Length: 367
Image (cartoon, rainbow, N blue to C red; front, side, top):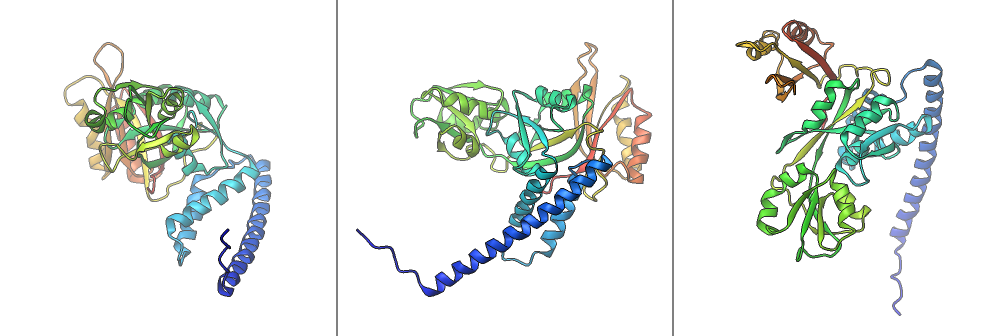
């Protein structure tokens, strides 16, 4: 039997120092938590919102600007988001609706925005996320909006038309799809399960490596992983979190066709839960409009933006489903509704529209 290596005096002294620092960190964190509880009592008495994403951003910005290393800023930001999430849970745990089951990229986006102390409510589809948020079952929801390679998530856009919720934040997530299976081999795979967007994002790799396997669309990638765990002939396209959640092997890592594959998620809430966040200096305003069917109508939509120096970053059309070949146009512009040039452009734009709805004005994701 081998004996453990003798610990050097220098290493032992450093470990004692780390233990002392850990104890001091714990004391300071609990002191911070007690102050956060007092803040919660005041907010409860005043009836003000407990969760303020703009306040979270301000704190993290201040901390990262003061950071002198050796910790990297992104790691400091992650640590502080978790600290604030844990403290907020003492004030009032936030209920957040996400696409389930556990292991979805939507869940990951929610944790990045709210921290892991949030109380996640898992929904079968984005319809349920919108409904849970609008009904008050959840205070917030997280839904996919668009992918950098496959474009918009059409169902989310359609749901915004009739829902009373608005967008209060966004998360841009680097999405890596992995081939998951009960056995650590891609031999004998008969069915590949994933969300339709994931199947589309990996179609080149699948056609080259598993051309004979059936591609079966399911409600989420994590649901595909759950199903793959029930049948050795099935495989899923999903995250590393899903692999861990359902005890599956990662047979192949990062098989998406585009290496830089990002999905943009919107954080939604009722206006009475959280009003429009104040301008941060790096904001996006999203709206949906329709115009009378006449020559030049779509061109005229762009004129107020140009005249007021407002930059448009997205323009998507969706059928109005009226049977009359009418369309809704989803527009993202740079800036906040409180900025004079943006307000002027929107006022002029509204006068041209048969339908006009601002979906939200919110800070853009820093990712």
